Amino acid sequence: MESNGTIKKLAKEDRYQHHDYYNIDELLTEDHLIARDAVRDWVKQEVSPIIEQYAEKAECPKHLFKGLGEIGAYGPSLPTEYGGGGMDEIAYGIIMQELERGDSGIRSMASVQGSLVMYPIYRYASEEQKKKYLPKLGSGEFIGCFGLTEPDHGSNPSGMITNIKDNGDHFILNGSKMWITNSPVADLAVVWAKDEEGKIRGMVVEAGTPGFTTPEIHGKWSLRASITGELVFEDVKVPKANVFPDVRGLKGPLSCLSKARYGIAWGAIGAALDCYDSALNYSKERIQFDKPIGQFQLTQKKLAEMITEITKAQLLAWRLGSLANKGQASPAQISMAKRNNVHMALEVAREARQIHGGMGITNEYPCMRHMMNLETVLTYEGTHDIHLLITGMDVTGLNAFK
Ligand code: TGC
Ligand code: FAD
Image (cartoon, rainbow, N blue to C red; front, side, top):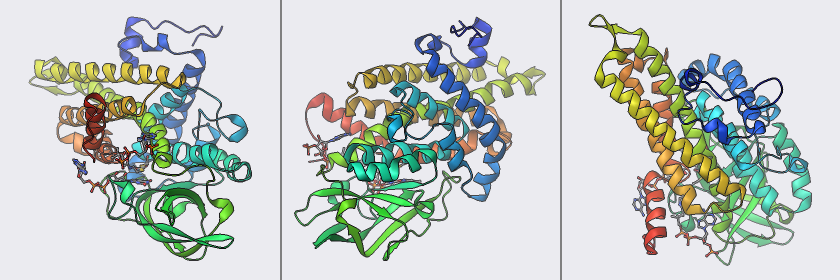
């Protein structure tokens, strides 16, 4: 950005350094670039210096929850009066990209809070609930989590057994949820459970409610800087006012997943860019057979294919963002971008790791951490194969799930 506010056209050299091979910055507005650069700087200062240490210890850098609120990472495209950033969908996407350049777990902290906790409250809760929870979630004062997956129902959430029973002025909630990002540190959970008619309902369950526990899941080799746990409900009293009044069925949680999957389609590009950047620099510095390894054709093939795939993913994300801004991004289009871009990032991380040779498996470089993280990203928010089947269903009109 130039000081007079006009968007700077990047010179060829800058573009290469910036990995903007197709001048995609020209497609972005000044607001997008300001948001991107601010989050990029924050990640450089707050995340990059500490992330390897936290990932190695398998510890969540909890102090970043507040900071993420301060930079507007929670619900960037939700209205400001409800704790969001009041920006468009491309701004939301590009913020996720910059967070995931730091670490997929940090992007997860923001995705869950903004798209899976604030968004359902904004879209489905009563005005009273919105006022009670959204500003504090937006600032990071409250941490939220989202409970859909169960021990026996992952890809098929419609089979869930967690349930609520009417008991006068409240419901009684029983069941359990598995693999829940942020659950052990959350102040509240957005939970999906079946009512007595078998309809899926959404509700807010506050931490500390008797019968509600959130044991942590240990032993993850992926997303180690993100905290994951269960949600266990044993005769938990949920006030009727906490149950979303106007939504029934799986489309409630799936609409939230559409928001989060969209953000992941952008986020994965950030992880790929960080790996590519590291591999490109290493290829110029590392000498073997008296030459930088970047001079060998096989290294160039890897780097050329990496930047080609990153560029294709950037264009896909940008176009999806333009559709989303018009309210025209379909769930199937979002599935295609989530699947393609996460797989692309995982492949880039693997190739980048190879370019670093033995050093690539250490925490001196980010590739192995991104690679391990991306195994989770390929699975959560709908697995790679589930998204393929969503595309298959969209193009054939035939449903593989029924
Ligand atoms: P199906 O009959 O196809 O659909 C039920 C209703 O939902 C509607 N719908 C959607 N609405 C909004 N957005 C979407 N993406 C939607 N997809 C479908 C649909 O039109 C229908 O509406 P209606 O009015 O007819 O009732 O449902 P199904 O049971 O056959 O399931 C289809 C399937 C397999 C695609 C779905 O279950 C699925 O997506 N499974 C994957 C589960 C998943 O993604 N879980 C993610 C858990 S959360 C998570 O991973 C967070 S990680 C967070 C982090 O750390 O970043
Ligand atoms: P399964 O559904 O058992 O799938 C196992 C394999 O079978 C996969 O390869 C899958 O593709 C394949 N498969 C399943 N059905 C079919 C089919 N019909 N056709 C072909 N193949 C099929 N969930 C939440 O609700 N909230 C969260 O915050 C959250 N955070 C997470 C954080 C982490 C670190 C992880 C790992 C997961 C998280 N999840 C969360 C859960 C995540 O969404 C599920 O893991 C995911 O949806 C897959 O479910 P599953 O693990 O039960 O696998």
